[in-house]
Image (cartoon, rainbow, N blue to C red; front, side):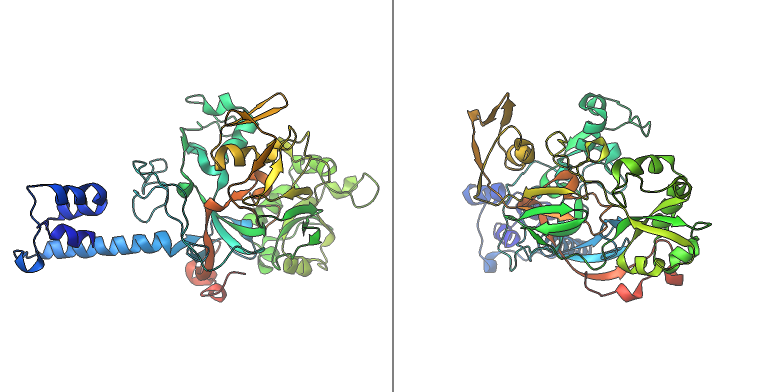
Length: 476
């Protein structure tokens, strides 16, 4: 329609029509009010004949434009990059994500390179979008609401700030571990990798990393985790059928072989982690400090067992396959002790003095709901400071016992958005809400519709490299 309007002013050149399409709110009024431009009816316009090259260019532009609109509002292809949802979703699953089920979201940054997310092709740091135009959050009506246990794709809430050389790690986690000055100092070196952190940049919501997790709790719920069991509003929640968790495994004489573990469906990465853990002294030192004992005794394993212990990631089916294995002496689920926080202040709200939670024992915690008002105090402000100051755009200060919002002392706060609690099915190998907190509604992208292809990176393409049983299947 915009291009046809430009044609009524005899604007047939490619650059003229591109100008009309991109800057229509400026260019079309100019054409309408300019005394030098003449409006012509279709029958009065001179015939414009396109060259073959121009026809091809127009066809390509239309195809790119149509595909971009589909990707932006309807469906988008997505690949599972990490094992955080195993065994419900596997590394190498290729999905189509339904972006209009919960309502298509208007992009915050509409000016961007087509078919990529936040970084230009052939680059690891060059951003793929321009921020000349920034749009506020708006979502068109959808045909469903997020329910408990839905698998959801969303923008990573901790991804508003990124160290470009360590995009695989949360900027805020690195600040907690190394200190703000160490991470933000120009040319600063990561003490662990001995590589620079890189430039620190901010990203708009729609250009933050895409994550996929299971929605455990929705707005208005109260979540609590006791020894890995999730409770929603005081009732035990449904556990995903193929969820994974870690176990201590002790062999009688030798470790299990790679072939034995491959047979039960274990990935090469998990096998390597298991084999490495047997000889890792740090794992052994952490056992008595962090993990749940078998009895009232403080001793979990004897010295002879400690010499043979490993940590292995298992689904219920894999555990059943191993529990009667003749080479296994013990198979014990790994639980973090209640009341002992994770190391490095990892667990939300990163305030172990007030909330000594860990990934297996957490909460109770209320999930904020739009329109609900909560009382604020010096203790619970750490639960809501990121909501108030970052997600909902207020100026927040804490001075002594006073909480100041937008330069006024506040005793209460009313939430402007709904929030969700997302967790991976691979409970001990998932960066999720237990580590970075609530997911705001404006970060929600959609839900996976079906798996159109699944590849196994541990196998050759024509020797088991395609998981045919998962092709054209529905996510669990």
